[in-house]
Length: 148
Image 1: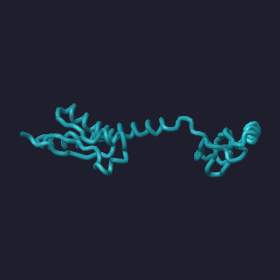
Image 2: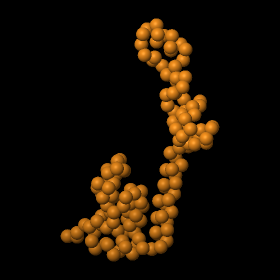
Image 3: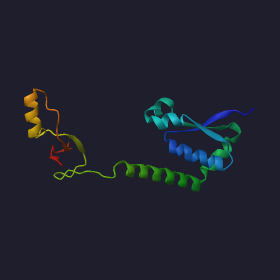
Image 4: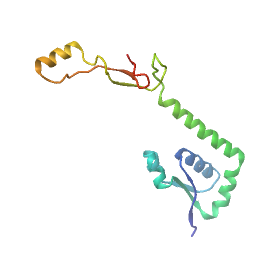
């Protein structure tokens, strides 16, 4: 019976899947472990030791030869780079910048100035309750400017 060994460990599940697919396309049987756990919660990467690529011990040299091919390594690096670029672009398509300082360190939060409207103040005083409605605005955390 053939022994299954851990061939390599990856901290990026995308890179691990690319290598796995390359090996499977070349006829080397392999599988990944801890991939789902790390994909769901990336903070477990260090605790689990990354995504592990397993294959048969007899295929270790074949797998090294396949992955040492420079064209494959360049294609792998480009694929991982394109994937990380597309993820970075998808995060903030509508970045809001402060009109005063130009910073993008802006949040949509409860206003610190003029946060209660006149109607809210009157109703709150009549009912003797804390104001129930507050205004929200964009707030720059660098220059403290508030804007709509």
